[in-house]
Structure formats: C-alpha cells, structure tokens
Length: 503
Image (cartoon, rainbow, N blue to C red; front, side, top):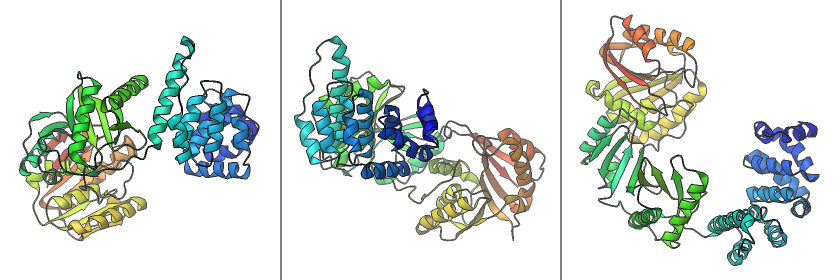
C-alpha cells in the first residue's frame, strides 16, 4: 500500500479496522507516517503489533531509528503521546522503561497517563516495578478530573499486577465434597449421567447441558468423557462479590499447592466493562492481596453466569483429549464425539470393523475406538490437510490402544471397500459453516446409496448432521436401511441431529 492510501484510510472512523485485514501490507507506510508524527498511525501500529509478523517489522524500524520513540513521547500532541505509549506497551521491549518513566514524570495531560502506566507494566523490568510501586495518583482537582483519576488508578493497579512475580500453582488435591457443575452438549445429559454412575458418582441435579455432582475422586471424573468443562459452584449470584472472593480463596487453598497469591480473571454474562472492573476490584480488596486480577496470565476464572458464582480452575488435570494435537474447521468437540458414541452404545459390539468416510481430524473415529475394542479403524477424507492432522492425532492416541487405525486421502463417493464393515461413523458436512446445501444433496444421496454395500448385515451407521431433513429423505429412498433412533444435540450454538441406522 502507498502511504497516501494508509493516511486516507486512517482518516475514516473504521480506517484502522480495514487496515488490520491487510496489516502486513500497511505497516511499512504506517511507519513512515509515524515518523512524521501521525497519531492515528501510532494507534494503528499499536493494534497491528499484536500480530507477530507486524510486530517484527515495527521493532526492526524502531531499532533502526532509536531516537524516534523518545521524540514522539515528547510530542506536542497528547494523542500522539498516548498512542506511542500504547505502541511501546504492546511491544514490551523492556529497553523503553527509562523513556516511559521520563515521559510519565513530565506528562501534564491526565488522559495520557494511564497509557504510559500500562506501557510501563508491560516492560517487565525491575526498574518499572520499582517506579510504579512508589508512584502515586494525583487526586482530582475538580469533578471534571474524577474520571481521569479513576482511569489512572485502575491502570496503576493493572500495571502493578502485571509486574508482580506471581507463581504458577500446581494442582494439589481435589476439593472433596465441593459442589460442581459439569457442562455438556444439550441432549447428552442422560449419557453423561450414565457415565458418571459407572464411575461411582451420583448426579444431584440435571438441567439442559448441565449436571451437578459433588467432587470425590478426581481420577474417577477424568474417566468420564462427555463433559466439556468442570465449574466449581461458589454460591448464588445475589451474594456480594466479597463473599464470592472468600469462597474462591477457600477453594484455591484446598485445590492448589503453594498458597496465595492466586491470579484470576472475572468473566460476567453480558457484563458491562465498568461493572466487570468494579467487581474485580472488590474481589481483590476483599481477598487482601491473596487474589490478583491478572486477565493476561490468570490460573483461575471467577465467572458470574445464570444466577450463580462459579470458578474454573485451569490447573485442574484433564488429559482426556490429550491426543488431539490439531483440528480442522467444523471439527467436533471431542466431548460431543464421546457423547455421540455413547448414544449409540446399545448397538455397538466389541471387535467391530469401523469406517469413517469423512473423518476430518479423526475425533469421532478416535472416540469410537476408545469406547470399546475394535478389530480395525479406517478413516478417509477428501482434504490432505485433514488427513495429515488425523494421522497426527491417531499417532498420539496409539498408546491408548489405537495402533491399528489407518487414515488415507480420498473421495468417499469413489471409495471401494475390500469387505463390508460393522460400523460407519460420520460427522457429515453441515452446509452451515463449511460447504453448502446443494453440495450436500449430492454427497448425502451418494453416501446413503453406498451404505448397503459398505455395511455388513446388521451393521449400523451413526450419522451426525445439521441436514437432518435431507438425510431422512435420502434414507426413506433406501429400503435396506432402517432408522433406529434420532437425537438432537447442541454444538457451538447449533443443534445437529444424530441418526442411527441399521442395515
């Protein structure tokens, strides 16, 4: 891009957003504008620096022009000083610490100071930490300055937290007896409850997409594959943040090894930014330094959702899906794949030969293989990249008993099997996020026409799709196939169907 084009784009309200789509192309001309003291260019570069390639370009330019950063921090334009501080904060090079301290000491415009303070927090140097520890926010001279005083105080709190030497805690022990909520795809609650019962755990409450238990042996919980996440229940939402803070601290002391302080972040359902900041501040104050609001490096999440205070602990061990080294667009969540397998459990026989004719990253194939022993697992996919990822995932799953699985690249409609298989599993293209309905008509018709030849007598096909109506129409035209069951589940805001068919 030419410098004039970048300048023209930056003069529009959404100019930076448009430039970010082609950021690498725009960085070089934006840097020329930066050297001329253009404040919007500095703002754009601060956002572009989040991308690694852009960041490298910017750092190389500033290294080649060592006096530029200090010059712009002394600009006569407050917006320029503010945006330059934002850029240096995003870069976090450490060597800009002295420049930023000097700029903050000299800064007379209050709206600029928060950006300078945050930039210092991002430097991660002892010099920055020592300066900010003794820094004091100037009281507001009148009502017009109260907002700026609050913003500066909040920036100082965030910067100090960023510079604190917060330890990363290891998991200590499961907090036995603590109430917890397991989240799963809607429609999979029954199979999750059955799985928990087999692991010796009792469900105390069940609602769509959620089941409640009391924590016992964590190892038993890890044997259950249908839940997506564990949320510890701290109390009802009508309890004040101070009470939630004490409950969170008690939970962390019980579960984490090493003791306080603990880094957390606050997540609120439909929360206003100002409200989130206020509640997070109240939590910190109530915990008296034992809880530190650190949204960029937290190890626990305090969540206010659906009328309940929850906690999610990121140190909690969960190796259930460690085999999943990669995924492709529209891949199934492995917990959903495990749930779909369990929906079809009454029809599954040990020692089966299994085929997934559109295996993607292999998630459904792997979860079927982990459910019960199979004589062979075969996967096929049209996309070479999907096959590469599936092979990588299968290699990682091999120690779990899936060394006999093979995947190859090919078109399912051109597939010729040496002999019929016992089971077919397929996460079919939805036509919502990948592909389209017209493509699916040909694909679904072709698949259903081939199922009688692919399946051994009495064999089953478990088909997962958003195109339930189309699939039912295709099955109705295939007399050798019988629809045994149909289920509706939830996945990423969609509600796909699971159709279980027998030859």
